[in-house]
Image 1 (tube, helix red, strand yellow):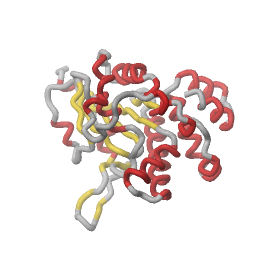
Image 2 (cartoon, helix red, strand yellow):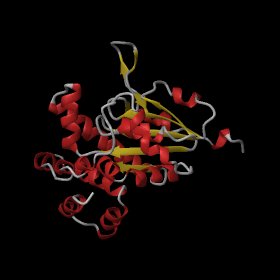
Image 3 (cartoon, one colour):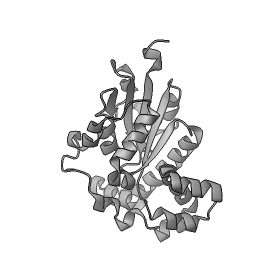
Length: 246
């Protein structure tokens, strides 16, 4: 078997404004990873000389399970997840962030209405939850808040997934983020922000299924919480309480 046939294909996914660019910048600092950001038409597969090649996209506005044809510009407006899933040695890194933080940032940065911001987050969670179920051994989920609090732990989880040695330089990825140069380091106060842990009453009441999927995804990134959830089958209210610790 050749080295080329052992090459891993990586996709980094998250809802808009959930930390995907920071995560990609950190992963991309690894010597053996060649990574593009929001590349179109699978261009990342042409990268040479790297053990892992990948792309970062926001879900659902840039990618869905099936491509969307935009008649206005006569092209596909979104990438197709099924094309990625068909790649050999495919690996997936998912990042999730609290709905209130994501919606607030989308409204502020992109000027989108609240309904659109919530739709992006809700659909993103639904897609990522399906992907995690479909690829339980080949997908890692990272909580944005937890990544800020303990970035090394999560970078080690990524390198374990990719069968690569951990490199300390990954923690300096924020220095190489071309889109958000104001980010100057890991701010633990952001990791512990109340809005990152509290249950948004209106959203949880209106979309209990999606909220539960979000909590399951976050639990997948925290072994203790995942163990409690899946083996003791706690109620949703109990998981909300436990999720305050991450």
